[in-house]
Length: 290
Image 1 (cartoon, helix red, strand yellow):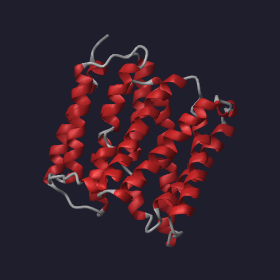
Image 2 (cartoon, helix red, strand yellow):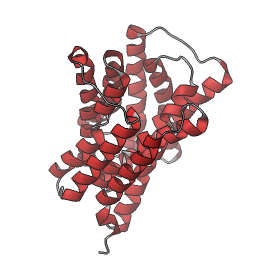
Image 3 (cartoon, one colour):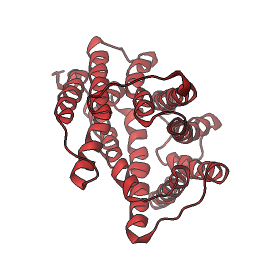
Image 4 (cartoon, one colour):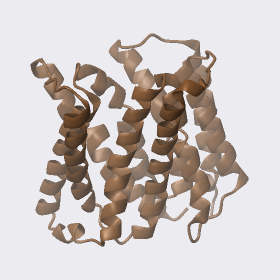
């Protein structure tokens, strides 16, 4: 793998590390409803992004084709809209598992990009990651699919398709600077605020700790993560990124255990082996000497 592409892949993977903090920050934010929390966090990330754009003289990043705006806003807001709709309409474990098809779909869809080839180890690595995610999300327990939750399952699949399509199609707009993500974040904040006003009751954070948690969301898992992911999928190895993204739910569970929000379980060790093995297999090209 060329050094520049390898660096971009590592930069993109840092988003996965930040997404592992999503659950603990969300748990620490109290009873703030999902769309309200999304609007608040994306406002923080969008404003910070605008500050970075201004400080680095990258204002031209915001002058982009309308198709890029549609893709960016549709990806960020669309994923969260479908995901929260899924959690309202289906059991959370099943909804989470279906929505977490997106790393596998990224690996599969990437074969449609110019210059990319889907090899067996990319696919097997992603499937191992998916298996590890099933173990960590279910705790090794059985999962049942109930037809009465079909609408919720469809929304979860919509979330997976939305994020995978956004990630893969972003490669088509590699010339669009990462500063454009600031605009995507602010638009997502506005749309999430509208969804909140229509669907939820307003609940503000109680105490400095919950406000800091909201700020932490806007800084990292709902903030900087989207900027580095944008750079990674545009310039890095998108198949490796897709497979390695399965580390997010595992790392998230470990963070919750360390923070005292969850208890240790044998399933964590099994999931670690599956996800780490899958990521290593999918990254086979990265370790091969040119």
